[in-house]
Image (cartoon, rainbow, N blue to C red; front, side):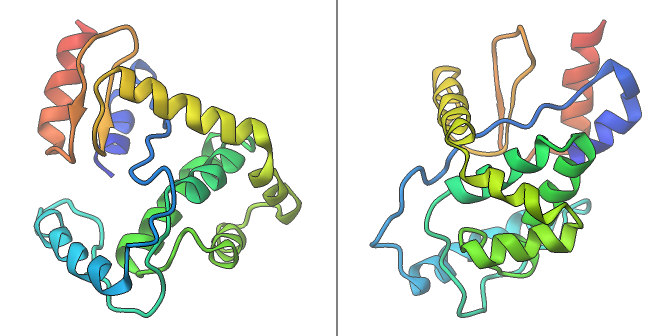
Length: 181
């Protein structure tokens, strides 16, 4: 991932903090599988970029994902186990959704991904913690306050301005390095 690459390059000078922004805060009953499949054709542009992770136009009968909250809760439960757990879960969620066309709002799928990541099974229960739900909602609202209206959105702590959309790694690198001077 591009931001992880920057974090690795700059070491302790940069720390990523993944925060929640909910593209679909509530389930949308009008979102049919056929509409969702058509939407995923928009993934072909980012998939064509040289450093893109695997993307696949949705071709399974799973889904469509109903809303954004369940995977955010899983990521936050993983984060409670440490940065490495969050990193592995975050990467696994993205690969499952974009590369494998798995419904990451389905409870059984999320538990399966948790197990595949090797996280302690008893810690999965944390995904139903009301405090995690509140943190997810609070972070989403904070993002809205900063003008975020899509993903990926990157903001530097203590600075105005947000970079929205999956940008080339060189753009992130220049933006961050200028701020570190």
